[in-house]
Image (tube, rainbow, N blue to C red; front, side, top):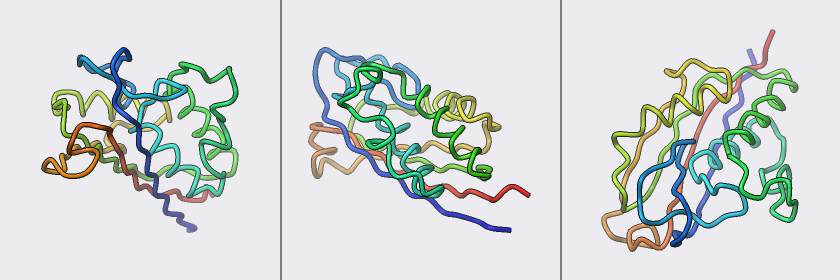
Length: 160
């Protein structure tokens, strides 16, 4: 059995005038995240972890922000494409553990739906994806509300 571990990290600035999309779920809030796509920081961290584990580069290389095809695109669509590339290389996803780092808004009621949507995009069972959230006690750019960050770790197994 060949296992590969992936780690992903992403950051986006909080701005007015954009919807807040996290884990493929639009969260009711008065601000959103700045980015070329829907700026889903949680999905971006998961995609980068998948890319790292499968040695695919990073999402900036796969889906450059200079390409108008990706303007405003749902990150779940991009996640599905990364999942396809991972499978094409002969890997199956074991599990994904993702953590959102944000002072606000409270996302507890949406975590299960986020996990389910990401699992669906990747053709996984919902229990293969874990979503957690934490604050940084008012410290740093996430604590002051300037931005949000996310980490993701996962493992891939070479298909037999």
